[in-house]
Length: 136
Image (spheres, rainbow, N blue to C red):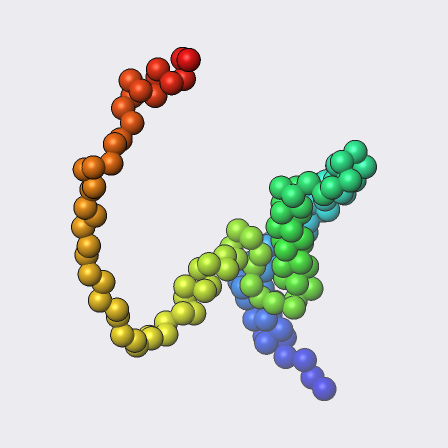
């Protein structure tokens, strides 16, 4: 089996492969930092649990975002996907709006406008009456 050096050279010099390598290097560096931050946040969450017997909800929500980032980054680094993680990843709202091009037909209900009539026989408390009542 003979190896064609030209084909190998073309494969090695493809710009898309080197671009992915640069992103992989950057994401590996960021992932290392995020793991360190996550360990610190786990300790802080334990302190909240220790003193209040409850989990801090805002911190828990932030941890969910970190977990999603770590998961997406690992999938990218391990060649599970070609989609880059945050900040290049489309948010769930953008994906939902891009995927929902379905036309739904239906009938609209006709709404009649009814003006509210004010019953003038009812007394509306005046500001003077309210102030006098609160003073006594």
